[in-house]
Image (cartoon, rainbow, N blue to C red):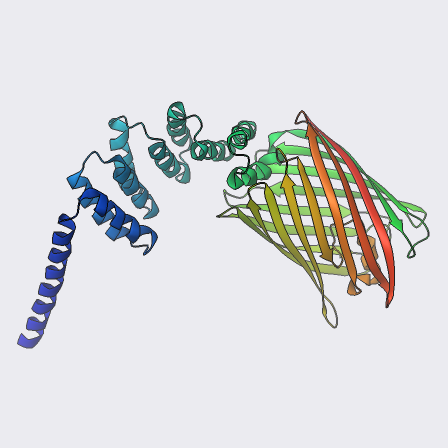
Length: 417
């Protein structure tokens, strides 16, 4: 027992000596040096408690060092010590600090705590001091989107992009809320498909759609009229894009047609999307087509916004009796102005259930080789009129070792009100 007590005493003495040594060492540093060490502990080592201790020591030396106080408030936020963070920020507010970084840090805390009115009050105070602060404007747009003020969020993001046209975060958020900006939208689209060898007749498809924006997401009802193989057919579709949280939203879709062979009799689909840090986004889901039998496809994609560009890679995997059919596509968009103004390029292989060629899956041609490449141009007029034109070239192996050159051209118009 005496040996154990002696060992315990020695350990306590060792740790106490170390702590006293560290404290003495820190006490010899000035506030700037302590601040730098705190940042190193936080960003390089993720040691937030050590960063808090260093920041607190620095503030004892320099109580009015605003940058360190803001940093300390952020540390408490990252550690989920909300009350401590608020105490730091409220003390800065009582001092009437005029610093946009302070308002951004304080507003971000209240935003992540879902205290939207308080977050907006703080952000607006910051913008009264610096109305060109991109960080504050983007945070304001996020708050507006979270409170379903989508028109206000769009206007705020338009202001951001006028200041910084290559801001990826603003571009990503603007695209994600564009379907909720207008309550109503109607549209028409015409699609023409040319076949060199595979079919004698060209295909014609006209689609009419109505979109309704709601507080939980947008809903789209679409009717497609087609002439394929010299016969006419009609398809009805319903799609929804419900928002689940700040990070997640979904795609849900279903379709029906009594003209089997021109359209699938039933179709359905669902995807879960995630808005990720660094302007990334990801998706995972399924698509189902029923002709005489069900065809099940599983899809995944990853996207990235970078300045004026959007990059996306997608795959469809279709299990079969003997193998898994694979489809891949890479898309690049260059945004010229807002979320409805862009030039797109796509290249890929295999069949996609999103195309107007879905009835070709009935003959299992998806197991053969297909290459595609295309251009897409969208532009808006006075923000409420959206025009689109798309051209896609296909080289299709519709029989073993027999290939066909095909062309798909689509033009569309949508009106928001």
